[in-house]
Length: 84
Image (cartoon, rainbow, N blue to C red):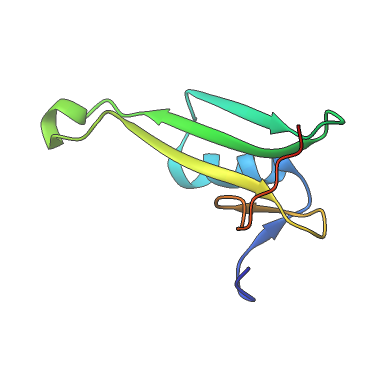
């Protein structure tokens, strides 16, 4: 993790920060560990101008829980261990 990277106290706080940056998201999915605790999320925004700019019509961002229990905007750092 980058020393200057912004982290958040909760998943909700990270989602709120993304909402401030990109506007209201169209959907999101959480990922949980074996005990049911959230460890990450994927957030999606549908773009209305996709046909004008040739884009795919969506923006996606990941949110992940750090080793110290805080949340960051970005994928889960490697090595990724997801217990079954």
